[in-house]
Length: 329
Image (cartoon, rainbow, N blue to C red; front, side, top):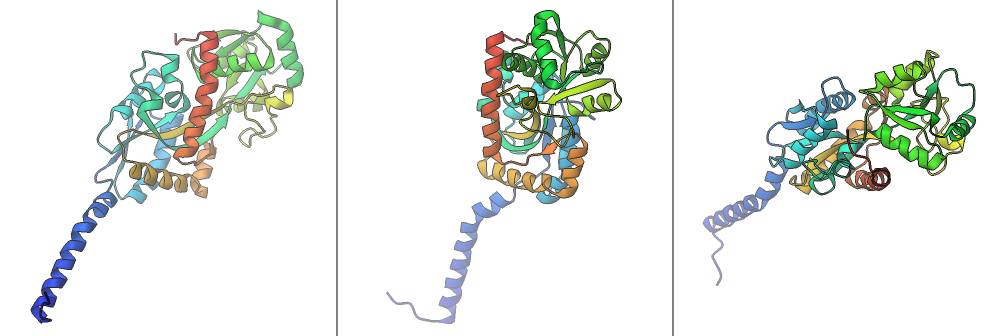
């Protein structure tokens, strides 16, 4: 049937087309409206801690990019696992977390009582930054890295190594180093790294894996010596310090890292948007320099890169946990 080409008919057709276009655009407009209220970043450590400082550094530029406030909420406890569990359980589409590697890899393997499963209940968003650990020893040591490793091998279990606790990355890393280097120092746990450093200054322990920010001031002051770093090559965070591979330790790599994760309930479109923004933010020169000043090197990967890191680290650390039957104290 042909309709007359009248002004009324044309107006009706245009109105109908506009209504259809508006209806079709509704889902897209709704998707683009996210976030519709403040975005919350949960941090599992107290204010002033390294993860907290990183989260606060990201908050302002992320807020500007999203057009909504970004709020930091500190929920310390259980090495960050209390906060990670809160992120995993969130269903409001406006909660994410800034976490350390243990929270996203071996938390459940290390402690079966952990109330969330990082592999099945958290979604990787972005690997923010990484750092090696420093194998620190007493300043009186005169040997090179290779010679000190050889001396440690010869000493058997007569030497000790200190860590800030059972199941920490320093503990698992040292147990991995023992298997790779053929050494056998005995583990001595302390309440924290400051006590580890004090014990090393008192010659109660002969070695420890320390974060660069704690190790290098002691090295610069001549109180400790840096034998090597745990990255595959040298790190600009600790200039002049060789890698442990240069000391003859093969197939050994260990880095600490922090990352942003989301609950599995967060739609993939929102995850991808966050990942893109975070990657752009951390690669800005001003942000990169601030992160470096906090003792980290920017990574800035997306979900896939973080997922690969989670998979490789989980495999390496779970082997150490199971072989040594490690359980948190």
